[in-house]
Image (cartoon, rainbow over all chains, first blue to last red; front, side, top):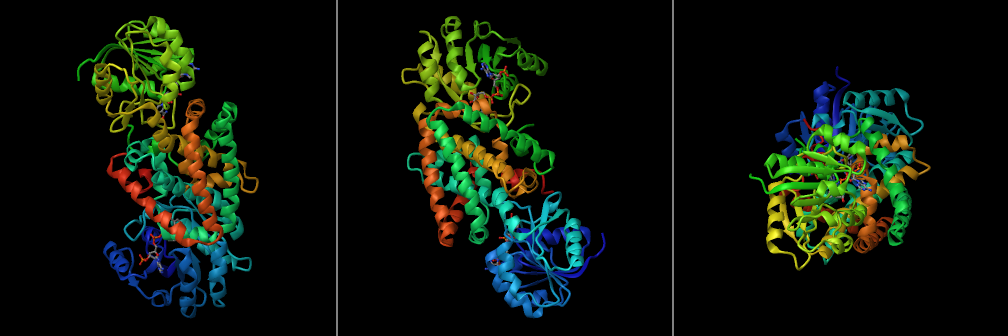
Length: 305
Length: 305
Ligand SMILES: NC(=O)c1ccc[n+]([C@@H]2O[C@H](COP(=O)([O-])OP(=O)(O)OC[C@H]3O[C@@H](n4cnc5c(N)ncnc54)[C@H](OP(=O)(O)O)[C@@H]3O)[C@@H](O)[C@H]2O)c1
Ligand SMILES: NC(=O)c1ccc[n+]([C@@H]2O[C@H](COP(=O)([O-])OP(=O)(O)OC[C@H]3O[C@@H](n4cnc5c(N)ncnc54)[C@H](OP(=O)(O)O)[C@@H]3O)[C@@H](O)[C@H]2O)c1
């Protein structure tokens, strides 16, 4: 693969920023990779890992002359960062991000984008429960989807270029509007994270079951939920504060459905339970067939030899 | 390891029954392993896999002369099976099970246990989302906990023998009363399964998000839930019908906690969200330290190379 951008600036060098850097290097996509983080400790750690050509604690210095700028910090920081870097963005550059919500990003960043800069929000649907500069790896985006949500008036050539870039990072790319993105992600990511955090919290708070018991017997199913409930708290707080409407809508549906199950249990209605439990299997099958999860039992945790 | 029982009868040769057979063979624990299943197709399949010395579609024939009998079918079938085999149980034999609930098993099976037979309910906290005779493997129980819930008057020597047996299968063993088991498992297994089934059902029912979208973007978190929502529907229906009280109690707490989160999202209360999200990480750390899950990102699904 040949160079697509002479200079790429990554604002935020955690899991997503560092993985993008590794994947860019793997494919030779950038002449120069500049990274920014707001704490000097993070910059030092990123330097040790060595995925960037230059590193800064000053965002404006980092984006100077960059042909592609990607915001990779928690979405609650985007507005201030956009305001800070707007004056130094290079005409003709693409300004993008990796934030997990898209409507709020357009609302927060859009007003600061200077004439001549192409603003194309993006969201790679790939991640792990780990964070920081040491968590990244080049294969993170391989075979996963990346969603672009360009505002209507965006230059199609710039969109095509960013699409090609994400494909070169290993992703499949889909374009949709920001509102639809936020609704789809509410069900495929945001509400699942919320209920995982919630069940782990509930378990932690029960007075009549000890934490030791919860931990010992977690292989009964609970442990699966603790993985996503171990994700970065700042990132997830910002997601829920910025996708309120869609999350509350899906959560309302989840609650109604759960009440129906609760009622079925109370009244011993085995048929209702069986019918739901029998149809959910098909969805997992489809996810495996679509290459979005492993078919190995227990996610191939390595117990079956 | 030397032989512990001359003949072991497994009533049910699905995931749990076949895994027990494989693990018994690995350690040489049984002189003869007899298996039963109620459908001839399952018996034929079990014969092909070859983990049993004899196979039956007649439960009474299977348990004849057995020193250890283990019920490994869905818990809703235990009562009828117990009634059927009671007359032929060998005096001095141990009658046990692998059912995921324990109070209901004592209620359903207890009355049929003949004088001189040791009835010791058990529950291995180990499984996968797969089922049937081909799903089993010898390592399933390694490092996992098995809970025994002997009624009060049970012979301590028989309990010690069954404990040693499960340890030889690879498990750690804990003894507790059936009521406590059912409460602990409600939070560590039953309610997590219920909410996983529920969110997958909710996703399937949304009119404004297509199934194709749910599948494509499932790597955002949703896919984790589909694994346990792919578990056997009959088994899980029987669990909820037989652990009603504890499941409804824990579900009530889960619902209250979720309402508080919903309210925090609605009112933009980032602090409440952050505080919960920050404390749940510690529980995952403890589960990993206790050897009950892998530390690899994404459960080591094999994406990080
Ligand atoms: N993790 C995922 O699964 C995933 C998936 C898709 C998209 N995303 C999105 O990608 C973005 C980054 O996520 P990540 O997982 O890479 O997070 P991460 O590993 O926690 O890294 C976050 C980065 O942002 C910086 N940062 C944190 N607070 C900041 C602040 N107040 N001002 C300036 N910089 C700050 C951090 O620097 P310091 O350490 O110096 O504070 C770090 O460089 C988020 O918007 C998230 O929604 C995440
Ligand atoms: N899977 C887990 O994660 C797990 C973990 C711990 C404990 N358990 C408990 O272990 C037991 C077995 O679970 P499993 O996962 O091994 O299930 P499985 O793989 O579905 O196997 C179930 C076995 O029970 C037989 N069976 C089903 N319905 C029957 C009926 N009406 N009458 C007689 N036999 C019947 C099946 O035979 P046919 O195919 O011939 O019907 C099969 O041999 C359950 O009580 C469950 O609660 C399961």
